[in-house]
Length: 579
Image (cartoon, rainbow, N blue to C red; front, top):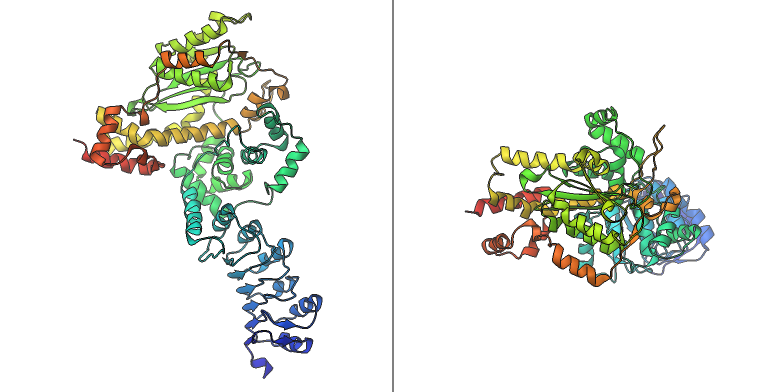
């Protein structure tokens, strides 16, 4: 009769001795075994040893509130789909063995010492349904998001002390993050050391570089060993924590659709790790990119373009500024600045114009206000858009006694000589310009956009300018934290632009900026008299009021548009109702 048992369960508080347990484990057709909350008369060592003899046919196993202290028996249970280990002494180190249970779908793990991070790691190896019920440890909202993002086939999640709204919010947060690409936000100067370490770690800096940022930028002395200990405590790791391959491939395909189809695998790897929350190795990204876009890989590998050598002596030795007009036929103007030594992007903004000297000067004044220093030299093209920047730079440098003070602190010339910023525009073309220019040209060809109509250009700025600025911010964040490689037979500084700019002593260089010879009130007067704030969404006040009247929607509510496709849909909707 024993061989006919397929389901074995007992009434509450039933006494199970060794003889009864040995008879149970000898059953070779057992499918379901429920030993939860039973009075087991022998110790944990003997109980765990007998569990190793269970038949591989078992599909459901309930051992809650038992003396179980080891999960080695799971290795032989190939058909196990449901496991209840609630109330046992199982911890993180022991539950890792569940990664070998390929059929496991339901896991009850209440009142154990298993953490959310371990559950998320397990979900990368197999797909299962996680059920938390009054867990002994208190899960934070970030833990719920972590589990939701890792469990690819999650169908039900119950966490006591959390309302259903919180869980829904976690699911919505994860999928919202998966659909958009946003640069990692700087936590602020008042952030804690833990937040700063997590921020710089996510930006792919080393422990030594993180310690340097804390010292030189935030005036916090933290040793490299302490940074390593903090990273371990915060569960920050790069090796052995790669995201599932399907997530990496899906995110690369999504980035291609959003305008990143012309970048190489190193830049793609940087965006994935620092902006998308995807952990991937360069080799994985290289192979995936070659499979997804083989023609682009072949075209980039030819390396036909050869650039001349150019170098500076240190940060703020020379700041290069220029406007970028590739999208000007569609109503969008870009202006940027880059440090000649470190190649760090100082600002990169999109607006309705880059020719108005008051609008352009606002970027320079904000840079001076933030850094509280004035650069040694500013280099620009000859043009009326830079006259206010020229006057401000010369006035602030007039009191210094170096050989480049006064009028020599501002240099004008042809664009071919403004090498650093022109180099930046050449990199910006495949990352940014090609996608947007092709999109607008396709809209013109399809009759959706008339770039000779001023109203259509206003609509372009209203709909697309915030998304374009978001793309520029992503490029700036990626560029400033990427690692510049060394070149053979070229005497050139190389490294991470942010590190080179903020920690020049590592490169045997010094900061060439000078103290600003005025207080904050003078800056307020300069801002009021010589600059002009950017228009909201790049449109005139009358046009914004008109849009609010015909749509009955507040201007701030349009900020939910954060992808090119959504911006295009909004543009078509507005142009269809405009007279």
